[in-house]
Figure 1: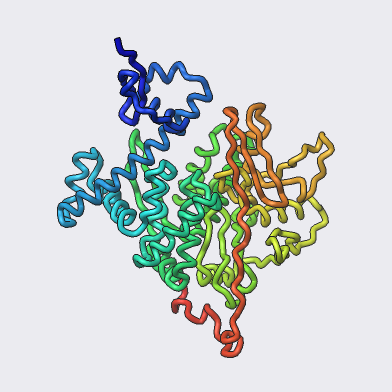
Figure 2: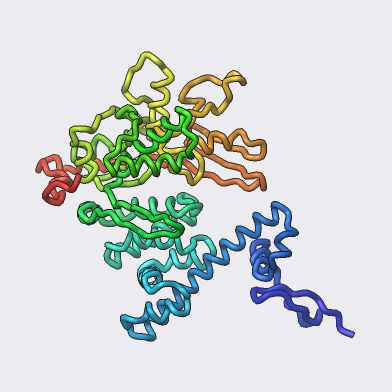
Length: 454
């Protein structure tokens, strides 16, 4: 009588005679994906915390791979139908989504298969899901095919080397926008101006008596408006208002638009946003290195326009020429804690927790070595953490380790998994060429004519 053994494969689990069973060794990740595909809800209810985390990771990899296969399938259907205008309608019926959603997926599939094969390959490998890939496609939409493939190659190399983390769609979108800026610096400014000219407000009907009022605004305007509403909500909450912060922000937003006085005032600084710009770019010698805290890279002409606003305040920031590390913010105040907060806000730019992009000036100053444990209040012993991650640090099963010198942060979850991020160094500033110095010309001489909105 033959002995039967259990064999697990991509299709599931089956039993074969021992002499017929293939000698295939699956990696732990592959085994987790096989189990995930065959699990029932009752089985998941029996898992330990570590097994649940493994299952979540496996589900994410399976979903990413499935998203890639859907992209290939949509592109193939588009090819078979000769790019007929009704391809999205046909796909929508089978995908059980609206025609609009199917059209967006079809567009994403065309871009991935034709212009960004390495990003698509990362999806197949389980690294990137459709949401993140869609953000990358959106960032490269206006590039020509050659430029898009250049960004695709560079982004894939950064993912493979670990210089870009796929932990969140926002991280990938930021990295893609920086690469787009390098691939087509002149077109970047033109596209930004066109996008800012297309600002709008939309009313999106929702469920249960709610609707969404959405406004597409220039990044610095939206960031300032939200920061001010948030500050007003927090002040109202501090007064003892029982509403949640989300409710307060929504109500204050509505009151302001309706012309009602919310009876909450905050300092002008409450709506401050940080725009980081190398001095060479501010002077028009270079067109690189401009970033808006909480958002990411901005085209140099747009950043210079913001800098020239009568409401903008210039702050000198001294950095180490070798490492780019912030050494001083060029501002003297009597109270050192305020100066340290300023330095931390400029140096860290955002909350240091991996994947969090809350601007540092709206985050807490966190002692890395606690005051009660003889920790000093200094830039070398502090980092910016949003309130959520500041409180998370004190959870007994979570660990956040931050190195202010290198900007490296590692977060360890209760399951023992570690995630690391590193503060991005300022981009290298292009030195003016001999031709630039002789002719007196500068890159900003080719800025698109006319003032952008706002």
